[in-house]
Length: 92
Image (tube, rainbow, N blue to C red):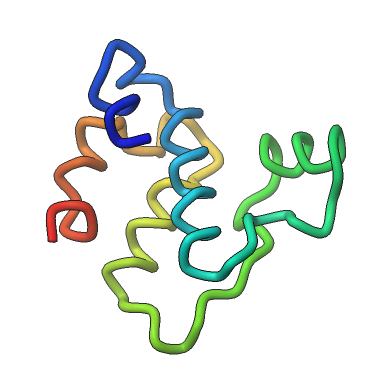
């Protein structure tokens, strides 16, 4: 997914929100909104902030800040892919 964010779609904020979902799934074993199916999940992804997930207590503040940035509901407030790729969580 990082390669998608660095390619021609780099400014599509929805891609970065999807990347945040992937990171949550890698950390928790479940994607956000995993309790919902199909259209209900898509609706939640597009309209809900913050997403429905719980990180382990051991999750770093850096990870929490990165995900908060990815999941900002307003496109105007959400950092671009180029900015997110400079985040300390990604560059570690």
